[in-house]
Figure 1 (cartoon, rainbow, N blue to C red):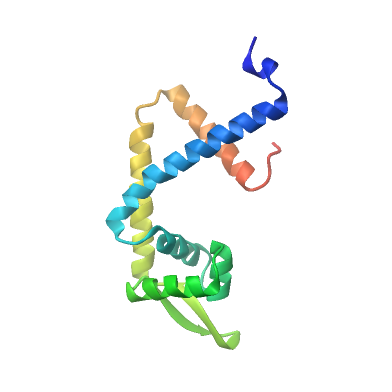
Figure 2 (cartoon, rainbow, N blue to C red):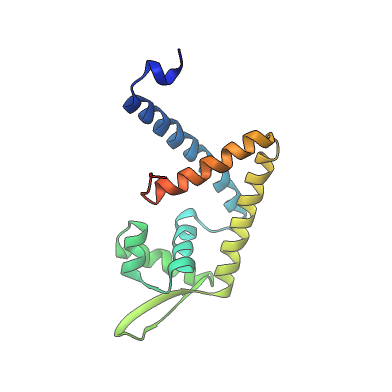
Length: 153
């Protein structure tokens, strides 16, 4: 008898969700090690990523995107600015507002980190068979779909 016939569909979904959660955490921890060579803390890299891909942003919007309080984000942005990864500029739509935007150095640092993480992951994937790699590709597509909130086909 197969596992799917012994367990309820709800239980099977829960089991897959649990394994996926664990696997994702382990994978992210492994890849985060690659960021150590950048000399930028994980919270700063995360904020920089948001600024690069969604910026320029106000501190409040950046804080909301990262799920932290505005004072915490201000400290993170201060550090990123000191390192030359972001700069503040006036918000043309709000005379009192300030926007945070990525600098060329910030974009390069983020790209370098991503390239290194992708290379590390590719090295691990290279040992898989063609069928295993195809299964991982399909799994990645499904995970992307689920993460967008669209689990339907």
